[in-house]
Image 1 (tube, rainbow, N blue to C red):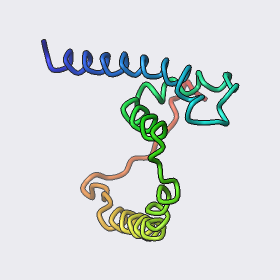
Image 2 (cartoon, rainbow, N blue to C red):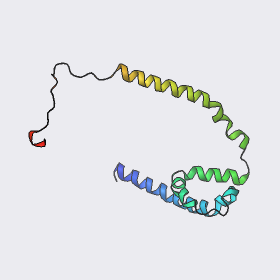
Image 3 (tube, rainbow, N blue to C red):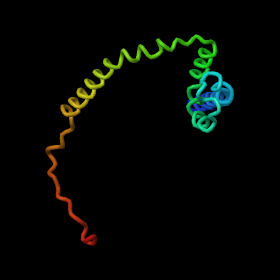
Image 4 (cartoon, one colour):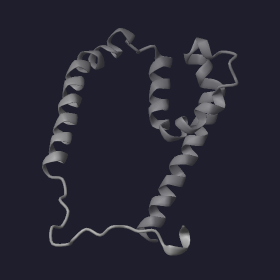
Length: 124
């Protein structure tokens, strides 16, 4: 078995497991952990691709929420504290990238003379 075949086989197994988790979570689990999702069946097929890809995270969150060990007060505090730092770093990165692009831009070859483009005679 080649490396590509192994990667495809592992991806297939990952998606099969994800399909199983999606089937269980979207039929049973979502009603148990989210009271706003009770009776709302139209949007659930839209969640299938996402659940199939991140099924370990879905299982972990489902388990944490079912056990009642979720501390929602602390859940969003760390990202909010980092927003200013991330915004400043993003601005500096964009400025540094543009500055580097202008400094190391490609120059045209100087030993080749430019040529004027003309239309073919039968095109006019």
